Length: 367
Image 1: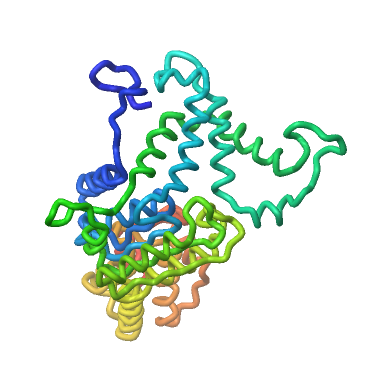
Image 2: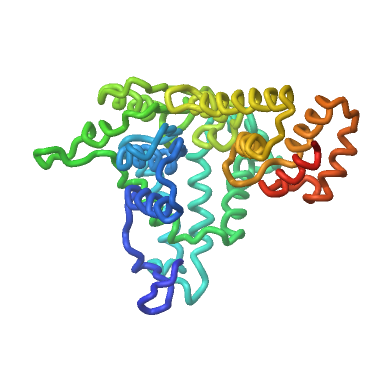
């Protein structure tokens, strides 16, 4: 638990309640501190999917795209029930002490049971059937020790609790914030309205659901997509996966999730075509430089700018090797790539990014 600055002891039960909206406002306060005005995209899954939608609703002028995976516009009672069971497991532990357990043993057994309950909601029946079936661990009939699935669920709980990386209070408070989540806002009449919360989200949106998700059933993601379209968003894509992994699909099915997100972020408007255009302009400049043999400081400065695609003041070692190789080839010099790498290593460590000053020195040395 965080330390309460008022008394220098862990907050425990006195930690202030917070909402998903509060979490998002904290994230944007951090962006302000870092000097980041606008995000290319707000992307998240589960709680992160709630936060992605919330960010697009609260700060639409600062979000270029939104991707929400296995989330919802308003928490459903079924999801609340699952998470309440997890909280009850923790709070029933004798060491719980209403959340003030930092001077003694933590409620590890409660956390273990909460993780077991959570694991059941994170995965799916079809996966259990495919992965475990009715495979037995013993020929005898024992209590809770007959099948591989029982062993797996027990292992997940024990592993998570033993690791000591998750404070039980975090489970309590974060799950409570998820339960209370809704995008609804007050309208002009002071009534809660989903349309009021949804209508600021007019940027391109990708909503992904999973057919086997029991924690956030796919109809909830379809509902989000329908709400966005009803609010006037003309750039909404709904993508539903038939995956075995249930709610954890976003963690495990990297090909399907990654491909969908990549495709969305690269489409126009607000996509990555500008990156491709910049790369094309950079390639064109390289060719012109090689053809004209113009290696003036201004030209090489522009070449560096084109190579520095991350705008962090550095270019990749291998890119400089390739550039100098092309320069040498254009002049009829038959130096090998190995020779060039060894020459560059005199200015910058092998394989390390190269700053602008060293790049210009290398470029001039290559003339």
